Image (cartoon, rainbow, N blue to C red; front, side, top):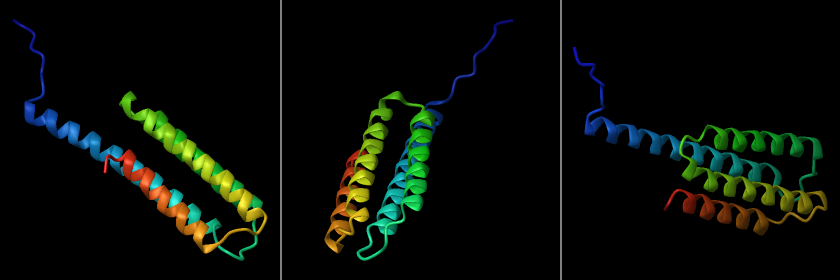
Length: 126
């Protein structure tokens, strides 16, 4: 008796690839939404800077990015996630500097959100 190896049908392979791509897209969109909410929470003109709340949110963001990078099955996508994390770190440092000195303006928040969307759109190939 011959042993047979079950191989997926071509249509099943396509579905699996689409499923993986959709999962990656959802992951990146989730990170985008987190970063935009982070900006909305801390880039508020006139709001008193709360270092403990800021640090807690940065730590939450770092955990989300690290989990996304570690869970990524396709090594070719990891550099994009690493780049997004680097951008989050840079945005957090910039926002900390501005907010802790009371230098947040509506233009800063708007510009940060615009840049964030542009970077995530690029990561998604849009």
